[in-house]
Image (tube, rainbow, N blue to C red; front, side, top):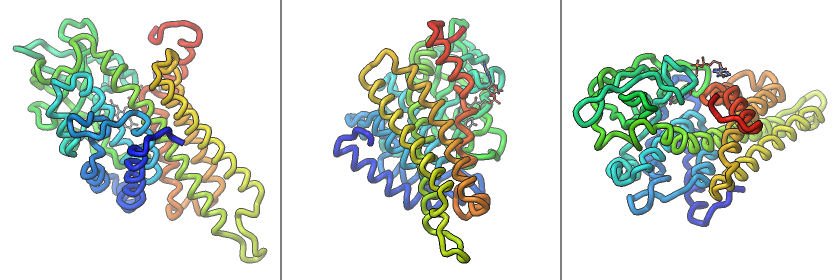
Length: 382
Ligand SMILES: Cc1cc2nc3c(=O)[nH]c(=O)nc-3n(C[C@H](O)[C@H](O)[C@H](O)COP(=O)(O)OP(=O)(O)OC[C@H]3O[C@@H](n4cnc5c(N)ncnc54)[C@H](O)[C@@H]3O)c2cc1C
């Protein structure tokens, strides 16, 4: 379905293999214990996946958004927490790629599997409206000192690099900095315990007077951080969220299919698959998943060709794919009855995981508002 080159096909085949072995082997335990998917992320790092977007000249795979989407789709089918951690990493990598010369060492470390990145955009003060940071950096010798209260940071305490937003010292706009895990003044609170995506450790992070040198840490220009947040991180985030929704939906279709054809009624000698209402539900799940994947491929094509409507479609992609995953997982739960309600079918995990994307910023509410504004010719932010 994804328009991949033969080389990219082999990368996706490797992702599928890792998903079906390493990720699948640990997903239930990661969810149960609410722990970071360390084994899965290590396997991805060892196989070069941390450098998927990094150019070959810096040791990476030189991949694009199409390859990334196809890989994330595979990972999310086995462990959505791993797919989300990996999504945040790639969103960060695309920010580093805004200035490959400045961040060459970091990019080489990504390619070598030595660097995991993440985003710290959401703040306690502006909640889901991440494009409006309230923390303001203070000018210091050759850079800034940053104090901020970040409300949710995936891979908090584990990620080596945190792409953090704030207001520029002169208040002219946002700035974006690379904060390192061991920078003085950084602390993590919480103890991630959530409904779904229980492996991703999206904990609150406090930055207190963290010294950041502009020459090595400022990403993009001071006061023009929106270019990085919306121009670099957001497209990758939206595409990956689209792919996660599809992977989750696919997992539900597969589990429902094998339950319907595998189980039945002893007293009538019929299978669950002999019931037309259940077959119709399965058909609906298949159709919605296929439609979501087809839309993702169409959006990738628009992004790749520089279509002026590409960003509107990328926003709509996260909306539609996330809502599809919630609807498909709900159908799967109804279709597979009490067997789904218990944990052994593995359906209640995607049912819980799928709900994360609709409240992750930009939330479905924001996406509808943005799309509506674009459709009637209003600026995105009013
Ligand atoms: C699993 C998970 C992982 C995350 N990881 C990260 C991460 O790595 N980095 C990061 O920066 N953030 C992360 N987030 C945070 C996320 O992006 C959102 O900021 C967060 O979920 C918002 O929650 P809130 O309670 O602050 O929402 P609120 O802002 O309180 O929103 C509550 C409701 O109000 C609605 N709402 C808010 N504003 C408007 C508006 N203007 N118009 C209409 N409706 C509105 C929202 O849609 C939502 O339904 C993560 C969140 C989750 C759930």
